[in-house]
Length: 355
Image (cartoon, rainbow, N blue to C red; front, side):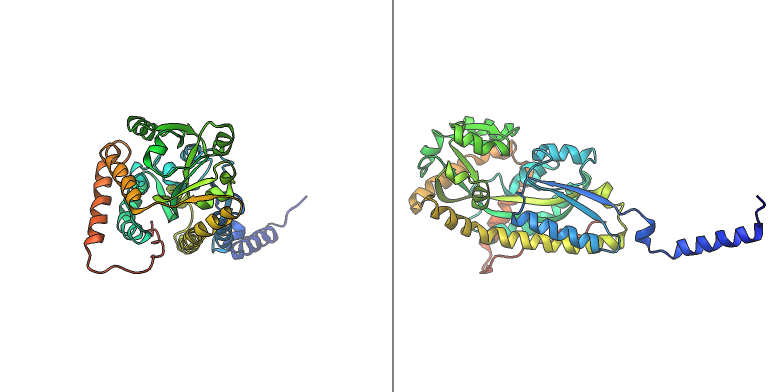
Protein backbone atom coordinates (compact mmCIF):
# COMPACT_ATOMS: atom_id res chain seq x y z
CA UNK A 1 0.00 0.00 0.00
CA UNK A 2 1.39 3.35 -0.99
CA UNK A 3 1.40 5.93 1.83
CA UNK A 4 0.80 9.58 1.04
CA UNK A 5 3.70 10.92 3.09
CA UNK A 6 2.53 14.55 3.36
CA UNK A 7 -0.94 13.42 4.42
CA UNK A 8 0.48 10.94 6.95
CA UNK A 9 2.73 13.58 8.54
CA UNK A 10 -0.18 15.99 8.75
CA UNK A 11 -2.33 13.42 10.52
CA UNK A 12 0.49 12.57 12.94
CA UNK A 13 1.02 16.23 13.80
CA UNK A 14 -2.72 16.66 14.40
CA UNK A 15 -2.71 13.70 16.80
CA UNK A 16 0.23 15.16 18.70
CA UNK A 17 -1.53 18.50 19.03
CA UNK A 18 -4.70 16.81 20.32
CA UNK A 19 -2.71 14.73 22.81
CA UNK A 20 -0.89 17.76 24.18
CA UNK A 21 -4.23 19.49 24.68
CA UNK A 22 -5.55 16.72 26.97
CA UNK A 23 -5.59 17.51 30.71
CA UNK A 24 -2.54 16.41 32.64
CA UNK A 25 -4.65 13.92 34.62
CA UNK A 26 -5.48 12.09 31.40
CA UNK A 27 -1.85 11.87 30.36
CA UNK A 28 -0.30 10.97 33.70
CA UNK A 29 -1.17 8.06 35.91
CA UNK A 30 -2.44 9.30 39.27
CA UNK A 31 -0.09 8.71 42.21
CA UNK A 32 -1.48 6.04 44.56
CA UNK A 33 -0.86 6.22 48.31
CA UNK A 34 -1.76 3.14 50.39
CA UNK A 35 -2.39 4.03 54.05
CA UNK A 36 -2.62 1.51 56.88
CA UNK A 37 -4.06 2.03 60.36
CA UNK A 38 -5.36 0.11 63.35
CA UNK A 39 -8.35 2.48 63.51
CA UNK A 40 -11.62 0.54 63.33
CA UNK A 41 -13.66 0.75 60.14
CA UNK A 42 -16.41 3.33 60.57
CA UNK A 43 -14.70 5.06 63.51
CA UNK A 44 -14.16 8.84 63.55
CA UNK A 45 -10.56 8.15 62.53
CA UNK A 46 -11.56 6.09 59.53
CA UNK A 47 -14.28 8.54 58.50
CA UNK A 48 -11.85 11.49 58.61
CA UNK A 49 -9.29 9.57 56.55
CA UNK A 50 -11.96 8.68 53.98
CA UNK A 51 -12.97 12.34 53.76
CA UNK A 52 -9.31 13.24 53.26
CA UNK A 53 -9.07 10.61 50.50
CA UNK A 54 -12.00 12.22 48.69
CA UNK A 55 -10.34 15.64 48.85
CA UNK A 56 -7.04 14.22 47.64
CA UNK A 57 -8.79 12.64 44.66
CA UNK A 58 -10.31 16.03 43.78
CA UNK A 59 -6.92 17.76 44.01
CA UNK A 60 -5.12 19.06 40.86
CA UNK A 61 -3.18 15.77 40.50
CA UNK A 62 -5.95 13.41 41.42
CA UNK A 63 -3.89 11.56 44.07
CA UNK A 64 -5.52 8.22 44.93
CA UNK A 65 -5.44 7.58 48.68
CA UNK A 66 -6.51 4.05 49.66
CA UNK A 67 -7.17 3.54 53.38
CA UNK A 68 -6.77 0.09 55.00
CA UNK A 69 -8.38 0.19 58.50
CA UNK A 70 -8.86 -2.47 61.18
CA UNK A 71 -5.19 -3.47 61.24
CA UNK A 72 -5.64 -5.44 58.01
CA UNK A 73 -2.00 -4.66 57.19
CA UNK A 74 -0.79 -6.15 60.47
CA UNK A 75 0.50 -4.53 63.65
CA UNK A 76 1.92 -1.02 63.64
CA UNK A 77 5.42 -2.50 63.54
CA UNK A 78 4.32 -4.52 60.48
CA UNK A 79 2.99 -1.36 58.85
CA UNK A 80 6.27 0.47 59.39
CA UNK A 81 8.11 -2.45 57.79
CA UNK A 82 5.70 -2.32 54.84
CA UNK A 83 6.31 1.40 54.50
CA UNK A 84 10.05 0.87 54.56
CA UNK A 85 9.74 -1.35 51.47
CA UNK A 86 6.97 0.91 50.07
CA UNK A 87 4.28 -1.74 50.00
CA UNK A 88 2.48 0.88 52.06
CA UNK A 89 3.27 4.55 51.58
CA UNK A 90 1.52 6.04 54.61
CA UNK A 91 0.09 5.23 58.02
CA UNK A 92 -1.97 6.69 60.83
CA UNK A 93 0.05 5.39 63.77
CA UNK A 94 0.18 5.75 67.53
CA UNK A 95 3.41 6.68 69.28
CA UNK A 96 4.14 2.95 69.57
CA UNK A 97 4.35 2.54 65.79
CA UNK A 98 5.99 5.92 65.24
CA UNK A 99 8.73 4.96 67.70
CA UNK A 100 9.83 2.27 65.24
CA UNK A 101 10.79 5.19 62.99
CA UNK A 102 11.80 7.84 65.54
CA UNK A 103 12.03 6.85 69.24
CA UNK A 104 11.59 10.42 70.47
CA UNK A 105 7.87 10.42 69.64
CA UNK A 106 7.08 8.35 72.75
CA UNK A 107 8.21 11.25 74.95
CA UNK A 108 4.65 12.54 74.98
CA UNK A 109 3.03 9.18 75.75
CA UNK A 110 5.49 7.13 77.79
CA UNK A 111 5.66 9.67 80.61
CA UNK A 112 2.71 8.67 82.85
CA UNK A 113 0.97 11.49 84.72
CA UNK A 114 3.40 14.05 83.31
CA UNK A 115 0.49 16.22 82.16
CA UNK A 116 -2.20 17.41 84.55
CA UNK A 117 -4.66 18.43 81.84
CA UNK A 118 -5.04 18.69 78.08
CA UNK A 119 -3.97 22.35 78.07
CA UNK A 120 -0.55 21.33 79.32
CA UNK A 121 -0.37 18.62 76.70
CA UNK A 122 -1.35 21.03 73.92
CA UNK A 123 1.26 23.57 75.00
CA UNK A 124 4.05 20.99 75.08
CA UNK A 125 3.03 19.41 71.78
CA UNK A 126 3.06 22.78 70.03
CA UNK A 127 6.68 23.32 71.08
CA UNK A 128 7.90 19.74 70.55
CA UNK A 129 6.29 18.85 67.22
CA UNK A 130 8.73 20.79 64.98
CA UNK A 131 11.68 18.91 66.50
CA UNK A 132 9.97 15.54 66.08
CA UNK A 133 8.93 16.37 62.52
CA UNK A 134 12.53 17.22 61.65
CA UNK A 135 13.72 13.88 63.04
CA UNK A 136 11.01 11.95 61.20
CA UNK A 137 11.88 13.76 57.97
CA UNK A 138 15.53 12.82 58.47
CA UNK A 139 14.31 9.19 58.59
CA UNK A 140 12.40 9.64 55.33
CA UNK A 141 8.89 10.38 56.63
CA UNK A 142 6.71 13.47 56.23
CA UNK A 143 4.18 14.27 58.97
CA UNK A 144 0.77 15.16 57.54
CA UNK A 145 -0.88 15.85 60.89
CA UNK A 146 -0.67 15.10 64.61
CA UNK A 147 -3.52 13.87 66.79
CA UNK A 148 -4.19 12.50 70.23
CA UNK A 149 -7.10 10.41 71.46
CA UNK A 150 -7.33 12.02 74.87
CA UNK A 151 -6.49 10.19 78.06
CA UNK A 152 -5.57 6.54 78.47
CA UNK A 153 -7.55 4.89 81.27
CA UNK A 154 -7.18 1.50 82.94
CA UNK A 155 -9.95 -1.02 82.19
CA UNK A 156 -9.86 -4.21 84.26
CA UNK A 157 -11.81 -7.36 85.05
CA UNK A 158 -11.83 -6.47 88.77
CA UNK A 159 -11.73 -3.23 90.76
CA UNK A 160 -8.48 -1.31 90.34
CA UNK A 161 -8.12 1.80 92.50
CA UNK A 162 -4.63 1.94 94.05
CA UNK A 163 -1.14 1.21 92.65
CA UNK A 164 -0.94 -1.99 94.68
CA UNK A 165 -3.96 -3.34 92.81
CA UNK A 166 -2.15 -2.92 89.50
CA UNK A 167 0.86 -4.86 90.72
CA UNK A 168 -1.15 -8.04 91.18
CA UNK A 169 -2.90 -7.85 87.81
CA UNK A 170 -1.63 -9.12 84.46
CA UNK A 171 -1.31 -5.98 82.35
CA UNK A 172 -1.39 -5.64 78.57
CA UNK A 173 1.76 -4.24 76.95
CA UNK A 174 2.34 -3.80 73.22
CA UNK A 175 4.10 -6.87 71.82
CA UNK A 176 7.75 -6.20 71.16
CA UNK A 177 7.97 -3.31 73.64
CA UNK A 178 10.83 -4.91 75.53
CA UNK A 179 11.86 -1.72 77.33
CA UNK A 180 8.43 -1.21 78.88
CA UNK A 181 8.12 -4.85 79.89
CA UNK A 182 11.55 -4.78 81.56
CA UNK A 183 10.73 -1.56 83.39
CA UNK A 184 7.38 -2.88 84.65
CA UNK A 185 8.90 -6.13 85.87
CA UNK A 186 11.59 -4.24 87.80
CA UNK A 187 8.86 -2.15 89.41
CA UNK A 188 6.94 -5.26 90.51
CA UNK A 189 4.25 -5.32 87.82
CA UNK A 190 3.12 -8.25 85.62
CA UNK A 191 3.25 -7.18 81.95
CA UNK A 192 2.01 -9.45 79.14
CA UNK A 193 3.07 -8.62 75.58
CA UNK A 194 0.27 -8.93 73.00
CA UNK A 195 -0.74 -7.49 69.65
CA UNK A 196 -3.74 -5.15 69.60
CA UNK A 197 -5.97 -7.79 68.04
CA UNK A 198 -5.25 -10.13 70.96
CA UNK A 199 -6.49 -7.76 73.68
CA UNK A 200 -10.12 -8.92 73.65
CA UNK A 201 -9.27 -12.66 73.47
CA UNK A 202 -6.72 -12.07 76.24
CA UNK A 203 -9.37 -10.53 78.50
CA UNK A 204 -11.84 -13.31 77.71
CA UNK A 205 -9.37 -16.09 78.53
CA UNK A 206 -7.74 -14.44 81.53
CA UNK A 207 -4.40 -14.08 79.78
CA UNK A 208 -4.56 -10.43 80.85
CA UNK A 209 -6.59 -8.69 83.58
CA UNK A 210 -6.24 -5.06 82.62
CA UNK A 211 -5.47 -2.83 79.65
CA UNK A 212 -4.74 0.90 79.42
CA UNK A 213 -6.54 2.42 76.42
CA UNK A 214 -8.64 5.52 75.66
CA UNK A 215 -12.37 4.97 76.36
CA UNK A 216 -13.24 5.39 72.68
CA UNK A 217 -11.08 2.34 71.86
CA UNK A 218 -12.57 0.34 74.72
CA UNK A 219 -16.07 1.08 73.44
CA UNK A 220 -15.24 0.29 69.81
CA UNK A 221 -13.61 -3.02 70.79
CA UNK A 222 -16.26 -3.86 73.42
CA UNK A 223 -13.47 -4.37 75.94
CA UNK A 224 -15.73 -3.24 78.78
CA UNK A 225 -17.77 -6.43 78.49
CA UNK A 226 -14.82 -8.45 79.82
CA UNK A 227 -13.17 -5.54 81.67
CA UNK A 228 -16.15 -3.82 83.32
CA UNK A 229 -14.12 -1.64 85.70
CA UNK A 230 -12.53 1.69 84.73
CA UNK A 231 -10.14 3.71 86.90
CA UNK A 232 -11.04 7.40 86.54
CA UNK A 233 -7.43 8.54 86.35
CA UNK A 234 -5.75 10.40 83.47
CA UNK A 235 -2.75 8.12 83.12
CA UNK A 236 -1.24 9.39 79.86
CA UNK A 237 -2.37 10.70 76.46
CA UNK A 238 -2.48 8.43 73.42
CA UNK A 239 -0.42 10.25 70.80
CA UNK A 240 -0.56 9.62 67.07
CA UNK A 241 0.37 11.04 63.70
CA UNK A 242 -0.34 10.45 60.04
CA UNK A 243 2.91 10.04 58.13
CA UNK A 244 3.80 9.42 54.50
CA UNK A 245 7.03 8.20 52.96
CA UNK A 246 9.03 11.14 51.64
CA UNK A 247 9.92 9.19 48.49
CA UNK A 248 6.21 8.79 47.66
CA UNK A 249 5.39 12.35 48.69
CA UNK A 250 7.98 13.81 46.34
CA UNK A 251 6.37 12.05 43.37
CA UNK A 252 3.44 14.43 43.81
CA UNK A 253 3.82 17.89 42.19
CA UNK A 254 4.64 20.65 44.70
CA UNK A 255 1.50 22.61 43.83
CA UNK A 256 -0.65 19.56 44.53
CA UNK A 257 1.09 18.87 47.85
CA UNK A 258 -0.14 22.18 49.25
CA UNK A 259 -3.77 21.16 48.62
CA UNK A 260 -3.14 17.72 50.13
CA UNK A 261 -1.66 19.24 53.30
CA UNK A 262 -4.70 21.46 53.67
CA UNK A 263 -7.01 18.45 53.47
CA UNK A 264 -4.77 16.53 55.89
CA UNK A 265 -4.85 19.38 58.42
CA UNK A 266 -8.65 19.34 58.28
CA UNK A 267 -8.66 15.57 58.90
CA UNK A 268 -6.34 15.98 61.90
CA UNK A 269 -8.48 18.73 63.41
CA UNK A 270 -11.66 16.68 62.93
CA UNK A 271 -10.12 13.56 64.44
CA UNK A 272 -8.79 15.32 67.51
CA UNK A 273 -11.95 17.29 68.21
CA UNK A 274 -14.11 14.20 67.78
CA UNK A 275 -11.91 11.80 69.74
CA UNK A 276 -11.61 14.10 72.76
CA UNK A 277 -15.33 14.80 72.79
CA UNK A 278 -16.29 11.17 72.22
CA UNK A 279 -14.05 9.98 75.03
CA UNK A 280 -16.59 11.20 77.60
CA UNK A 281 -19.48 9.98 75.45
CA UNK A 282 -17.85 6.55 75.26
CA UNK A 283 -17.67 6.31 79.06
CA UNK A 284 -21.35 7.27 79.31
CA UNK A 285 -22.30 4.65 76.72
CA UNK A 286 -20.33 1.92 78.52
CA UNK A 287 -21.85 2.87 81.88
CA UNK A 288 -25.27 2.14 80.40
CA UNK A 289 -24.22 -1.44 79.75
CA UNK A 290 -22.64 -1.98 83.14
CA UNK A 291 -19.23 -0.27 83.28
CA UNK A 292 -18.28 0.64 86.84
CA UNK A 293 -16.24 3.86 87.02
CA UNK A 294 -13.99 4.08 90.07
CA UNK A 295 -13.24 7.63 91.13
CA UNK A 296 -10.39 8.33 93.51
CA UNK A 297 -9.59 10.87 96.21
CA UNK A 298 -6.82 13.47 95.83
CA UNK A 299 -4.78 11.43 98.31
CA UNK A 300 -5.01 8.28 96.16
CA UNK A 301 -4.23 10.29 93.03
CA UNK A 302 -1.12 11.60 94.78
CA UNK A 303 -0.06 7.97 95.40
CA UNK A 304 -0.45 7.19 91.69
CA UNK A 305 1.53 10.30 90.77
CA UNK A 306 4.32 9.43 93.19
CA UNK A 307 4.46 5.91 91.78
CA UNK A 308 4.59 7.21 88.21
CA UNK A 309 7.32 9.74 89.00
CA UNK A 310 9.34 6.99 90.69
CA UNK A 311 9.51 5.32 87.28
CA UNK A 312 10.90 8.40 85.51
CA UNK A 313 14.60 7.57 86.06
CA UNK A 314 14.00 4.19 84.43
CA UNK A 315 11.87 5.68 81.63
CA UNK A 316 14.49 8.33 80.82
CA UNK A 317 17.09 6.76 78.58
CA UNK A 318 15.44 3.32 78.40
CA UNK A 319 12.01 4.09 76.99
CA UNK A 320 12.33 7.77 76.07
CA UNK A 321 15.54 9.34 74.67
CA UNK A 322 17.12 11.46 77.42
CA UNK A 323 17.08 14.71 75.43
CA UNK A 324 13.38 14.35 74.64
CA UNK A 325 12.47 13.40 78.21
CA UNK A 326 14.37 16.43 79.50
CA UNK A 327 12.75 18.72 76.93
CA UNK A 328 9.23 17.52 77.79
CA UNK A 329 9.95 18.04 81.48
CA UNK A 330 11.35 21.53 80.81
CA UNK A 331 8.35 22.52 78.69
CA UNK A 332 5.88 21.35 81.34
CA UNK A 333 7.68 23.35 84.04
CA UNK A 334 7.85 26.39 81.77
CA UNK A 335 4.12 26.19 81.06
CA UNK A 336 3.24 25.92 84.75
CA UNK A 337 5.50 28.86 85.60
CA UNK A 338 3.80 31.13 83.04
CA UNK A 339 1.65 33.82 84.74
CA UNK A 340 -1.33 33.32 82.40
CA UNK A 341 -2.69 30.21 80.74
CA UNK A 342 -5.39 29.69 78.15
CA UNK A 343 -8.70 28.49 79.55
CA UNK A 344 -9.49 26.41 76.50
CA UNK A 345 -7.95 23.38 74.86
CA UNK A 346 -6.09 24.32 71.71
CA UNK A 347 -6.69 22.70 68.36
CA UNK A 348 -3.97 20.36 67.14
CA UNK A 349 -1.07 22.22 65.58
CA UNK A 350 -0.73 21.44 61.84
CA UNK A 351 2.43 19.75 60.66
CA UNK A 352 5.17 21.99 59.34
CA UNK A 353 4.89 22.23 55.55
CA UNK A 354 7.50 19.79 54.17
CA UNK A 355 9.28 20.30 50.91
